[in-house]
Image (cartoon, rainbow over all chains, first blue to last red; front, side, top):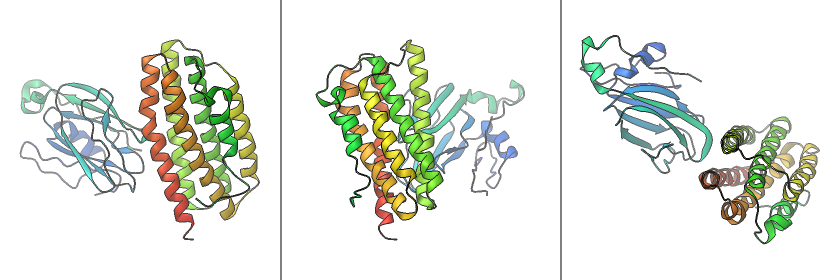
Amino acid sequence: MGRAWHVCVLGAGLVAGAVAGAACAADAAEARSITIEMHGQSFVPNRIEVVAGTHITWINEDDMPHSVTAADNRFDSGPVPAGKSFEWTAEGKGTFDYHCIFHPSMTAVLSVADGKRSTQPDAGPPQHAAVNQP
Amino acid sequence: MKSNPLFLPAALLVALAVSPAFAAAPAVSDAQIAQIVVTANSIDIANGQIALKQSRTASVDEFANLMIKDHTAVNASATALVTKLGVKPEACDTIKSLQSAADTEQAKLRAMNGSAFDRAYLENEVAYHKQVLGAISDVLIPNAQNAELKKMLVDVKPAFQAHLEHAQHALAALGTH
């Protein structure tokens, strides 16, 4: 798995760990468990869409503390030391800006979509994640 | 912190702590606070750009890049906020003193290189972030009238504190080489 970023898909009977790049990004909206890295003073990926109920783990791979703080305070990790992680289960629907309070340039966007979409085949084509890789 | 006689933080003390606007916490308008924030960030961006030119030490370059990124982001947020609020940043004597002191220190930095530069740059970053943190806590936040401007100042404090600690660690690491 590339160091740049990875997303682990565990939901709906699908386990796809060692994927990276566009294919992995495309699956992110269907994921039930994903990992976002804090690496190089960036969130990687820094823009992602998940379905409601997805369990998100942010791992701090830098050698300095970071935080995962939503602009509207719906989640706030407090200081996450180097090597540690923060977990949050996506609730509510919408697009949420978040950032590291210690590094103002470290910003990202999390979009939470209706959780029913991934379990209802007739709901139309999946809305794939938009991921901007650094 | 090892003292460097060529590069004391006195100039910044003069600009931020001793200048009329910061000495006794007089009233500073929101427009002036906005300009002080932008100026303070711009100065540290310029310091970082000098470091990228003068230093060949990876840890110093990393710190300088982070300062440039983070302070640019703060300036972008501050600019967006004052635009939204319709506040026009306004110059004042504090800003002139701050910029004048920075010009002097940056001229000293540009004349240095090697390990002397690294130490001088990081010592200045430690002193500068201490002074700006003091100014934010003691002057800018108490005087900010607009709630959103005040919140922005409160929110940015952890970043300045983190930068201070990062600079202190980087400076301490220099001592082992």
